Length: 350
Image: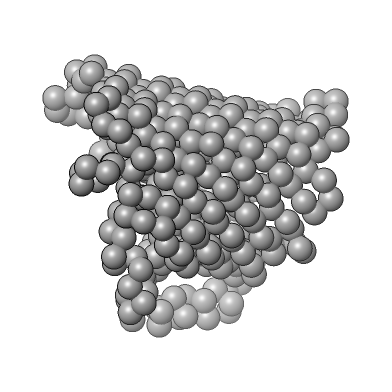
């Protein structure tokens, strides 16, 4: 039923007067991993940049205004970033995952900015993920995207990296970055753009971004503020986070990300930091990164990671990447094992 509905929507879009674009990508990952349950090789979707498809359309409505629509589905088949069930994920007969709604919004834009309504990105979506380097298909500040669900605790109690790490972007306590909301984006002025969003439930966030060039440097930077409408024991929950990334004309690039959350009535005060150094040359891109977060789920527990990556861009829309990563969890009183992984990805856009 879902696929017939999507086909009908595509046929409608193709016959509409609006300028419509159908787009998507398939991004698959061959992953070797080693955790307390042993080593294994699996094929999964690459959660760094998920498999997805959708269509977007624009229609001039007069008075200098343009109406738009965005519908997009996402596939997380055998997504190793979220699963800690090492038997189910290896089962050859496992049923394929279905497509889930990723974006479903309408918009109206003009000289005074853009107004969006529906399920789409929050104002602070990706605020700690701004990156000018060329390895973003396999490594960025969401370190749990590949292998985050693997188990580091040898005592029988599951201790996964994605439990104790967050890159503190988006709204809600689980760092959701696509929710039902109303969002306003200002026009771009000298590379600067501000955004504000109000989500169902009362969460709201604000963001300021810069995208431009200064001498021989291409720069992307952003700062975001989130206020979570928590009506319980937690009290007021606020969050500040952001990132800056710069690439020199020589290809050398660096990225820094930072975030912290303040919770009135909890000992948990999550904090994260991310650093990445890269070099792009021709079709190749290379990078090394480090990231850590503490007090995300349990007071005094720190999750940190080291990674090396390379990405090759064959043509526009086709890229392959190689990732080597070690994930570690420092829990007082528990001698956790490191989780090691090697991933090979292939992404094809259409």
